[in-house]
Image 1 (spheres, helix red, strand yellow):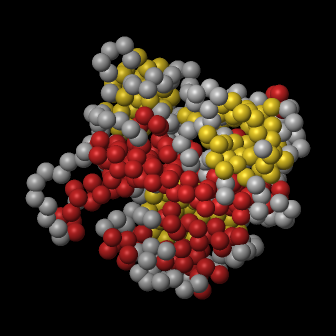
Image 2 (image 1 turned 45 degrees about the vertical axis):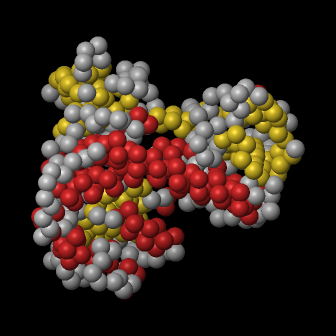
Image 3 (image 1 turned 60 degrees about the vertical axis):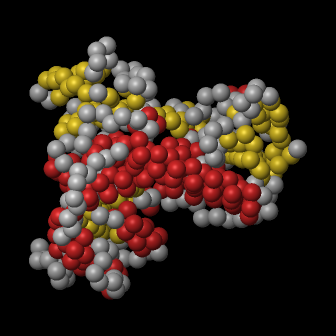
Length: 466
């Protein structure tokens, strides 16, 4: 059987590409060896947000008196039940994608795929049976997995990755989290919220190191307020797992220290899934774990494409989805707008949340821009005060000469929902001062965007102008 498109991998890049291809009238199949929806739906984006919601509810319950509500009895966190809810949410979303496949006429092929010659995909199922499928076009969307460091080998018990972190059956009394990107910070927040004594270790000078320095310091303060130990500018040298606990040797600016913990979570990044895919046999070029593609995700081999974590660019679910749409629309003969990698939002779903897009202040200054900085703290927000958490701010980075919105960083409740306004404004070519006259509803957290823009031009109403 020959298809117009075969997509290898059903993550947020693969399944979106498959559905869009079917909508465009192409005979489409998606090959998946594990759960439909890939890591994002099953072991990443979705189930982690379910865990974080449970942590948020637990924190609300513990601070109910601050809202004038009394709760009798002890409030406890039942980790197995929290995990069960999280797994249920993931399963529901995975079934939703399978439903969309059926309704859009996308064929799902179960098994492990390998490229062979002549744009043929060999798929081997769990019983070892193999079958070959031909396609006019093949899209590789195999994603990535947890990265292992030589001195931090995961055994799945004492040294774990994100998969084990979201399915623990017993809450550890103590945990060392290595790496403070979105994954590490979110798990550190989750377990600290439930009562685990967390030590967060980051090699670079600030946690969430890709974010604005002010945003990083704000989140670090929030973590320390929770009694989390935050160690920046530090590196894990070794982990001794021979005893009942892990003994983690950490190199700091002041010398080596040992930290004992029940478990160590390695959150130092991801490694792409390129092994055993048949890339060499097919002649597909790749280097340093990334497949080389053009702006429409064409590899050097005609008819073979690659999207998502396995190509250069941010390893984010929403990026993979957009790349998948652009890729199949180009295959279908359309002229899709290419992805603007300078306008990709990044989100960290801790409490407070962190969100950003474009350049932060340091990056803009490094590129030689003369800046207007507009910053509005949530301490001045009526909605934040009413909600009981006024931590954080909105910070706009505006070019002083052109009034272009160069970027934005946000910290606070629900800012991951708010950042899209800046993404859309930048895409539409809006200027910084346009945000001032865009009437925002009151009271909302999103008013802070308008207020930050006003502050950039010395027109702030609810804070003193600098």
